[in-house]
Image (tube, rainbow over all chains, first blue to last red; front, top):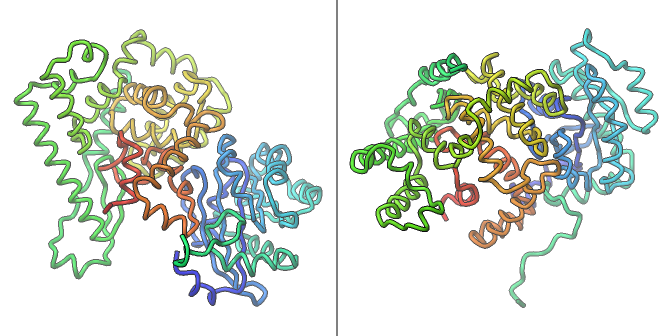
Length: 211
Length: 310
């Protein structure tokens, strides 16, 4: 919320990342685990929430605005507008619940296709809760093959133990930076307001010359 | 009767609430950065710096003052005077001056806050929950919850997933007893209105209603009257259309009533529904201290939050 002029020197690039997936797969936990190194039991997200993380990857100072969405089906009418302008989308499932995995192709991939405005947007499949290995029902191989089918990145992680959590966002950011159009967006869009959803041009403040 | 034990457990949880630490201003200045942690009226842990706590203390004192007003009115107008003031059709047809005066007094009083001990009775009666309950057989709630206990639907699956995530760590809600009471209310309601079923957010509302109303059945009827008669239609149904309407109305109201704040948010390109959606869907149960939660005047309340000094 600080003035946009001063914030510019803090980072080189700014990207918008979106977390989607069924209710209870651990989207908020993944985000909190990444931001603050600690995870308590979290309450269900109502609507949307976002957090900002500054970190350095590949010698670049990045500012990631990560949008966390509610997973329950009926909230999709609220969350769909947040796909707009995202450079990275993380599709999260729970390795201990098969329905959360099958819903990625049945539901979430379709949502991305429908609402993402960015053709080159990088997608990443993330299987969460690998700390509960004994309860696992979705194998790593299945995850990898679905990721291949979607043409997206793949990682398994645990928000609880923080295993692979940082790596997940790092790999996503690196991949985004490899795409010229996204890199371009990151260096221009980023200088504008982080909370901005719309892609319209910045309207200058009302001038004094005319009314 | 069936849930007598539930009852006492809630009371217990509330009984051991710690007193808000009272700090003198001189100490306050030096301790501005100290975090104070205590349990509030309904057993929630509140954490904040000394200034926050002092604000809460002020609110608490105001509620206490309000309590004295309620008691003195009760002394002069008789116990339960406020239960006979509803502006219903009978009132319109026989406008008695004293009734009208009482109704106006009551409205003013409610805006200022209802003392916690009177909340169950006042809410239950004035919201229309009592009337709603009276239209069905006595055993309705027990029959309903008994009949649907073992049924599995998408709604019950989501409810079961959310029970341990609803105010985790609360001394009563986060116990097997609290979970099953909340489950019965939510599952019962999901079968009463299959269009709503279960929508995330209702878990917080129902949980707080359980704490305030003290009995599970009254909490159920409060939830029913809120969704069916008090709130905008379709707030929680499949595509949340009512919720979208609320957000639009709220944005228009904000522009109209608080143009400077609206313009400021606009300049920052901040879409206020990003935060207000949760406020409306959870009726503030997730975002405010117990002292000021669950207001009946949703829109003006939200405006007040955004514009404490306007």
